[in-house]
Structures are given as structure tokens and as C-alpha cells.
Amino acid sequence: MEYAPEEYTRHYIVVALFKLMSAHEYEKISVTDIAEKAGVGRATFYRYFKRKEDVIEYYFAHNTREFLFEQRYYPRCRADYLKIARDVFEKFQKNKDCFKLIRRAHLEYLYLDFLNKKLVETFREEYPDQSLYQPYLFAGMIFNVSMAWLDDGCPGSAEKMAEMFVDSINLTV
Image 1 (tube, rainbow, N blue to C red):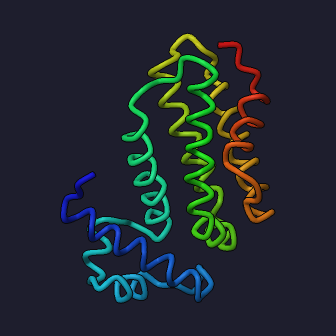
Image 2 (cartoon, rainbow, N blue to C red; image 1 turned 90 degrees about the vertical axis):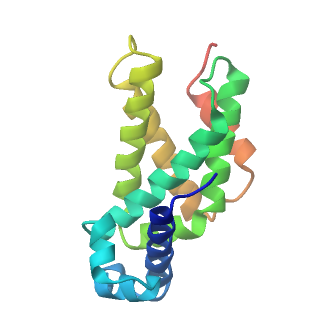
């Protein structure tokens, strides 16, 4: 996947924030600290982000764009749901260090907000006749299971997590 130059700048800012979060309390990190670590000016930071939390929200959106680019289909059967769930848990497990920093900073609500938004968008497109509340149910399940799994150090395989998740939503497709 090719990136535009502004995507590289955003990437540097994301990396800088997570590096700073690994060494300092989130509340004590300033925009100036992030900009300096990223090698950009404060004006450049504010060109792309209004606040520090926007950097984390961008991190979720960027990872999701890559994930959705890899999927390119809507699930139609249990095997499709298993593959998507496995991919989600693999991506989460691969990024667990960033999620630990997010959790340590008490910003995990940003992840839940992001899941809610993305699943509602997906359901409206793919399942317009379904309940408006169902995507929130799935988002809550993914969020809570992911956070508990993270707190345990993400033991076991993403495959097992996917099986548990798909079995618990009792898909009949």
C-alpha cells in the first residue's frame, strides 16, 4: 500500500507519541514533546491533529484501512467470520504493546468508540435491515474480550480467540 507524503508525517507523529508514552505518563506529554520527537514543528502537528487523542484515533483508523484493504469482501459464511475474527485478533496481538500503552493511559475508551463507529458503518452498508443495536453488541464483545486478553498478556492464538468469539455470537450462516 503506497502512502502520500502527509501519511508519512502522520506516521512519524504516531510513532513519536507511542515512544513518548512508553517513557512518560500520557498526561505529562505535550504537543511540543510529540512534535520534537517526530521531527516536525507544532504547526505541522496541528495541521493534522487537533489534540493528542486524535493521534491515537488516527492510529486505529490507519490500521483499519490496511485491514479493510486486505479483506475486500463481506462475510457470507462461518468460515468468513472466523477468518475476519482471526485477522482482527492477530492484528490486536501484533499491536499489543501500543494497546498496553493506551490502556495504561486510560484511553481505551478511544478504541471502544472506534469499534462502535466502524461496526455501525459496516452494518448500515451490509445489513441495513438489522437492528441498530447489534453492531454495538459486537463492538462491546470485541472490546471487552480484547481488553481482558490484553490484561492477560494475549496468551494463546488468535485462532482460538476467533473461534471463541464466533461461537459466542452463534452464527447460523
